[in-house]
Amino acid sequence: MKRKKRTFNVLFFIRMIHNNQQEARLYCRITIMGQRYEISLNCTIRKTSWNKDAQKCVGKTETDRIANRSIEDFRIQVQEAIDRVQVKGQELNIENIRLNLYSQENEYNTISRLFDYHEIIDRKNLREGSYRGYIITKKHLLDYVRIKYHVADYDINAIDKPFVQEFFAYLQGYRREGKIRCAVNGALKHITRFKRVMNLALQNEWINRNPVTLLHVKKEHVEKEFLTEQEIKQIEELTLKPHLEIVRDIFLFSVYTGAAYVDVSNLAIGNIRQGIDRSLWLQYSRQKTDQRVSLPLLDPAQCIINKYTTYHNNKLKNKLFPMPTNQEINRHLKTIAKEAGLDKTVTFHCARHTFATTVTLAHGIPIETVSKMLGHAALSTTQIYAKVLDNKIMDDMAALKQLYAVKEKTKKISNQ
Image (cartoon, rainbow, N blue to C red; front, side, top):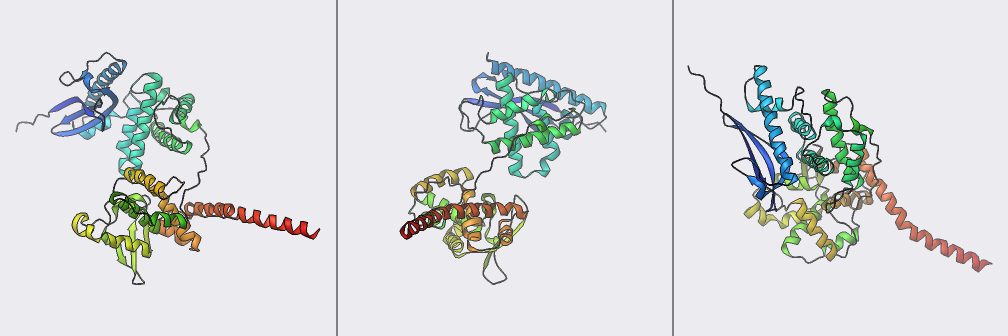
């Protein structure tokens, strides 16, 4: 029987950036016997610079030269991966090419390839939100080395403490004109992901030490924003346009249930069940922690669900609410907060904080019960809200203490 010839092809191409008609990102597609593997080369180029037939940039800018260098480097890496597969006697397929592209034998150990290797090893263990976080961290690192060193990628063995320190400064705005700056805690999240990926290189003996561990920055304490009962009422009483009304209703549902955005998005009619007291309960597994959540529905939450009965029948099929994206909701919440006269930064997650504080803890619900209803894996996470309430009590009582101090002083003067 004649052995089937294995077809192999490497193609470099571009994809346009969403909402950007001028720039595109560079990709490589490896095809073996109909199976495809696509990988970003982490290069952004002008659309007009790209020659599809030649599979390279024809422009004369530094960006074009870096992109073409990246193409040639990656073409060599693919060929080296093929050679390793054949030397090892492995089957020439996509999975073996992927693994050998980032194997220990590969001398091209760079930031981009290390993050790609991390994806191969840990993708199955990462939730979607965590996975997106690593993609963003990788992008920030590659943007940084492009600006600082004028290269598309960077050797991980060349990373030292000054590199890490300057990257942290870059995240906070250094040499990032026109881009949104990360707050300290946001920048620290990127450093944490960077450290984990570099630990993977350390475990594989690709580096002798992890310089990211040498950066020591304290996490900033940030008070969690939540609404008072009066502020909730102000939002409830607004007359809004239909698209804002939907956002207001979904937000208030979270205020009265504590459900996070992603969990509200996943809710279906089947998550509303009869509880042990024969009333309606909300029951679901929280996506972030996989903790089981079960709580009786308060009347305001039930009213919101009832309001969308027609949606269930006509548009939503099984979903509980017509969900805009998280970004759209947060953008509309700014408008709603302004119309309600609130001088606060109101985001969707503010609803969850409000449930924990104003709706439950402030009304004497035990912190252990609140923790269960929030789906927290540890009680210590919920205790943050109790501290927030203590601070609010202190602020609220300050004016009252001042009033009584004045009264006491007046009394003493009168008795003299």
